[in-house]
Every structure is written in structure tokens, then in C-alpha cells.
Amino acid sequence: MSFPVSRPRRLRRGDLLRTMVRETDLAPSDLIYPLFVCEGKGVTKEIPSMPGVHHHSVDTLIDEVKAARDEGVPGVILFGIPASKDARGSGAYDAQGIVQRALTALKEKVPGVVLIADVCLCEYTDHGHCGVLEGGDVANDPTLDLLARSALSFARAGADIVAPSDMMDGRVAAIRRTLDEAGLEKTVILSYAAKYSSAFYGPFREAAESAPRSGDRKGYQMDPANAREALREVAADIEEGADIVMVKPALAYLDIVRQVRDRFDVPVAAYNVSGEYSMLVAAAERGWIDRPRAILESLTSIRRAGADLILTYFAREAARLLTHPAKA
Ligand code: PBG
Image (tube, rainbow, N blue to C red; front, side, top):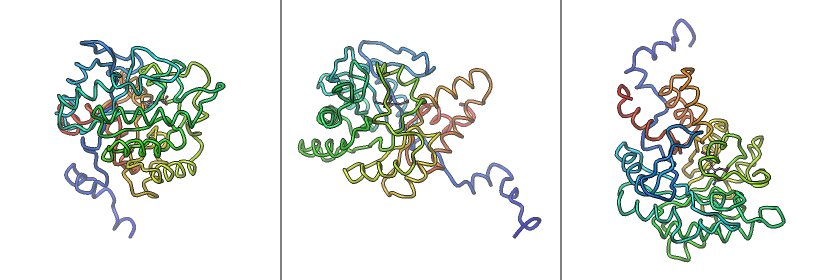
């Protein structure tokens, strides 16, 4: 069937018809909201490289999470800004650490939202690497125990999901074993399975004060040129016990999201990272791009590529746009 019998424009006539034949949907329930928690009281400090994103102390975090929940966002992921850092990242597995206290407070004060804790040492180490250093190198196996201790302390503090983002080999197995031995077999593992060594994390590193002091993360995060390797990473994490796998970043890696979706049956998440956020915000601030449309188009593209869940700093704004298209 070809023109003039076939006229694809027929199905594009009017909003209602377009809605009926739309292939991909985007809903607030697809979104996970990343948040930064710091020490103090009454703190909402804007991150200069991420306008609209803040460091929150536990009290203001509670309000932010309530607001997100009330707008229909079902989950939040927490990143900690500890008061002090050391070589072994002990804040990550301190029962009184900043994220642990935030989780306990949220569990009590904000029911009805899934609490996710990012598991990594980079926010807690004074050298800024995601694991412990031995001879200038990030040592894999000695890091596993610390990551597992961190995941365990987050789960004990109230995390429903732990999300290892460090890219050490074998960390999902180590975390699963430790959780199960502690009777926390119900805690979900969302692994950052295919996490690339990306320039798009720039603003996050300012936000989390986690840029490595020396060297880079190319010895553990993936080479952006590799796709087959991502499938091996995902297969390994599922084998080790990951319940949900993530591809990160999202927009420059939509082909990876699609391949992971096609190859595996577990839920797939994608992380619309800080650089993706800040580029869009900066262009919109200059009037070069229509912010609401660009947000929804970006998030829809991530869903279209096959992601079930999207971690995005736009979560609240997108939820509002989806619920009240006219108002937002
Ligand atoms: C590491 C971690 C990073 C992000 C989430 N977890 C940064 C990194 O690897 O340097 C990046 C998130 C973003 O850019 O929004 N714990």
C-alpha cells in the first residue's frame, strides 16, 4: 500500500487520534527522583552547576520527598554529602551516616514512597575514587566487603532498594550474600550494570563533591565505545542477583538501553544524568530550547528505547507536566 491510498498523516490529525495511536507512554510512576542529603538543619542549597537541584538537610529533604510523592513520583534515590571523608569511605557504612539517618527519618515520616540508596564509596573517600586505593590503583576485592557493609547499613536504616554504582566486579554477589545472611532477603538490588565513564557526570561530581583527586574512573567504568561489553556486564549482574539493571547515562546510550531491553527479562532502568539535566536547563535559560517540551521528549525517548524506569532530576517537574499539561 502506497500513496495515495496510504496517507500516514491521517493518523496525525488532532490530539485525540494521536493519543490513541501513541506507541510509548510516559507516566509519573516511571520516574525516580535523585536527591542529595547533607548535614545541618533547614538547608536547601542550590548546586551551581545544576540550577533547581539542591543539597538538603534531613528536615528539608522530608518536605521535598513528600512533595514528590504527592505529585505521583513513586521513588527517590539518595546520595550523601558526609561532613568528613577518609581513605576507606567509612561514612558509607556508618550506622549514623548521613544517608542512614535520612533513610530512617523518611521511612518514619514519608510513607508511600520507595527508598533507594546509592551504594558507592566515592562520596565518602577523601581521594574521591569509588573503592579503596592500593598502590595508586582502585583495589577490587578489598572494596567488595566495604560496599556490602554499606548496602547492609542502608537496608537496616530503611532502604527498600540498594543501588551499587561503583562498577567493582562481583559487588552484586557480595551485597546479595551479605543482605541474605542478615535476613534482609527482601531488599531489592538495582545495579548500575552498564555504567560508562562519562563526561556527563560533571555536574554531579560538583554536587556530590566526589570528583577523583587524581586520575580518572576509566579503570572501572566502561568505555563509551563498547556495547557488547555492556551486555556481558548486565548478564553478570543478573547472574549475581540483580533484580533491576541500569544503563547510565541515558541519552547518549539509548542503543544500549534497547539492546539490554531486548536481551534480558528483568526491569531496566536508565539514568538521565546530571550533564543531561544541566545542558537542557542551560539551553532553556538562554531561550534556545522549550524546556517543558524538551524534558518530555527526552524522557519519552528513554522509555521508547525500552527503559521501564528513569532516574531523573526532572522527576517532579515532569510529573507535574504529565498531570497538568496546561499549568506546567
Ligand atoms: C557514583 C555515581 C555517579 C553518579 C551516580 N553515582 C558519578 C560518578 O561515577 O562519578 C552520576 C550521576 C549523575 O551524573 O547524575 N557514586
